Length: 194
Image (cartoon, rainbow, N blue to C red; front, side):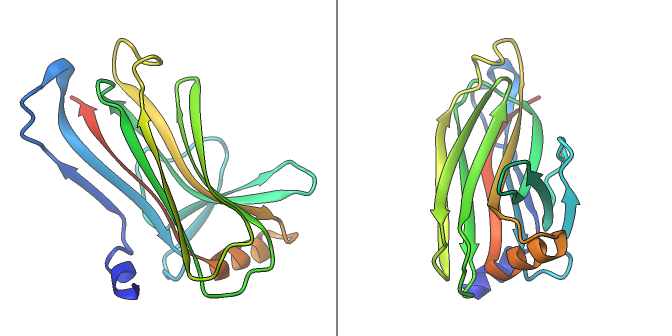
């Protein structure tokens, strides 16, 4: 498993130009996006979430956000925005998080989210104290964009998130996240509107 993880420690943004026979509405270029963060990577970076995410998926870039709840929670996530998505095909979004082999003592919510127009969808992969050395994975399937974007390309935002009650400081929260989660990722295929 470590060899497999090592092989995918960098950002994979693979573009496949398909031999699409149906170039209807300018939708001919198939694209695969995978964004991930490996917590054992020396180049992992953290950025406070201020409401916007990068339009470019980048590896090992983790956002954090303090949820104004009582008790206060912190979220660590990978996220990006994708414009020019063809709306003729429904999309499938894959999410994953791998819990490390370190015993955990606090509950986590592990979930993926997709936002498009005024719609959103959330997939909770797990809520509770995660099992050591366990992959939490799932898929949001058959997501349609045509209702929100009937006349043209869609734009969406995708997030893969780990949330837990804060330990009181950003340094303590980052250390807990890095120690207990080995990686988080989000992936999907779509046709680009060209």
